[in-house]
Length: 226
Image 1 (cartoon, rainbow, N blue to C red):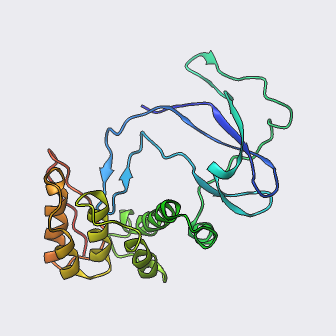
Image 2: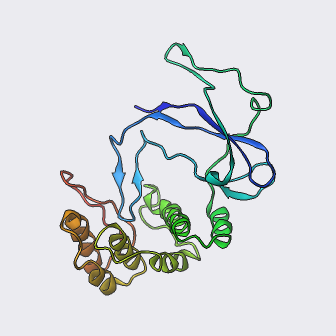
């Protein structure tokens, strides 16, 4: 079960408009699906907004760069009143939405920070792959025009660490259709991640390039979409 937390208020770093986004009080990963690109689809643990576009000035920004205006309870639930008297000007604060790939591209062009670039490019990757995750497409969605370019840049930001970075690098190579390179990258992965490496190796050997469902220990099906 997911319960909401207080609204987080902040000011746009460009135009100083007061904005807000929701937070989570509690949640869990029951019924979640793990995908080969590392995306965890957890309906009961929605992801907080971290990048957005200001609805007032239309500038893209990371919320960590915004002016923090604090958190305030602004809803009633479970028979209790969690609504506060909000500071002046907060009542009509627009709620921001997740940044789309166009906004993420703008942010990528504005930063040289390696960690932030990795996050932005990974988020772009996940959004692009959502079309494949849609059951209605049956894995037949077309790649966005800059899908490959984004992955190529992301690969350059990932380390050969025998762990998560190297796993993601192998998956990026596989989704680029570089199956031999992906299998080579899966060598010397830490033993605790062998269950991940084995499945990515299976997909690469089969010539599968699209993102698929990752079989976690104890699960019994792998969705390998061609």
